[in-house]
Image (cartoon, rainbow, N blue to C red):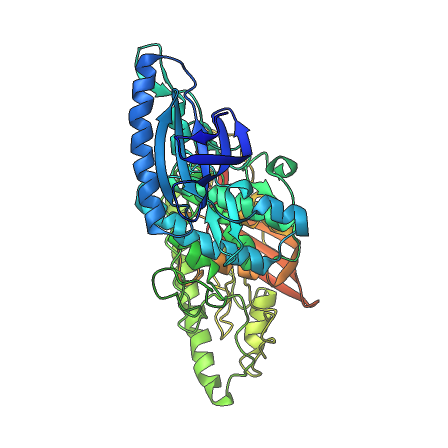
Length: 554
């Protein structure tokens, strides 16, 4: 190789080489300091004059973009110059003294959670600026992130657009097209692998990079759920907080619409219950106490079933943060009021139940009506016994970190604080459930009971993203139940519950579109306590995915 490139740059050593050319460390002989720089030599993959002209035009355009990007952030290398020589194209960029994240892991081992969080917080503002320029990096990975020695900031290098220009060819119709897909297998998501990258593709790559830093596992060393396509990685990073794990889970979701829509959203999610970042986001940081309004995560295919209208809870219901209400007892002077509420509930329940029975009788004259009204002659369920006894003796609430036996934080939710009795129009667990008949042909589908059991099995396996995706969009977006969206969900399941022991699942009623299921279980908390619970599930049939989804709970 000639001593000087472009009669100016003296090559010191080769930094790397690949299918597109080579990268050199050089010094600028026309600068008084002989400052060091990185020179990337790029060559077109086709030796065709017509293609060369197209590549030249695209190279100039992409170089101008790199110049703009280097000017908006000091965490993107500055473009010093670009030139052409002997049919090849050259970029001259700022030399970043530091170590790639790959080298960092090789030298010192796995990075701590705080170190990974700091890297993400440093990079996400840079990515937002890049995306605001309508640029997708397309090759984020540990080799393309350098921790700069002088200030320990993460610097993003090696944008993929220029390399894509080098891959320009003519297709069978004689039109120019790119013959290559930019990205690294394992670090790029499925839509990028077929040549359709979006902004969240970069967030996916950043999430996979974070997993590598925390576990030391390359993407091909991690298992993938064959049903959902989600990456199974939690078992390799057991000490990671639920908040960071949840942020990474959402970033690496298989479908783009299930990920963070923007780098800003991911940045805000990292601030959830964490200290202020060490670097500002070019805006005042979001206070940890302000709810993060995360958009709902849609299921993997459009969910076209209309949501079931849910019954509004009693006015005393708590916001669904994943802790129990504070320990307290109801004052004795409220006993008469509680009796009035109980009596009113029983009367209203009886009227509703009578209407239900009459409705079934009118609509199905050829079938005998099963009496579903549970009155005071029936044996009360555990919840009814608890509610009845609470008229004279208030039920004490559990400690701050665990729910009381009558509370059901199924999705960080709780029953009303006054332990209102179970609605009397619903059959007790000892009665045979009434299942409306249907004239439509039955298809091979899981039963509603199996759907509930599978839901808890998913939770016990730590697959919180898969569990979250079994909720209907309206239920995910219920801010009363999930004030911080998915983060509230994993804060409960990943942060406080060790496992769920399902004791009984009973079908209450079902047809081809709707089902109601009662579940009784025990929470094994991470504090070691075992807490009983019960939940009524309202399910909707998702025909496109051949599954039941949870639309509401009580």
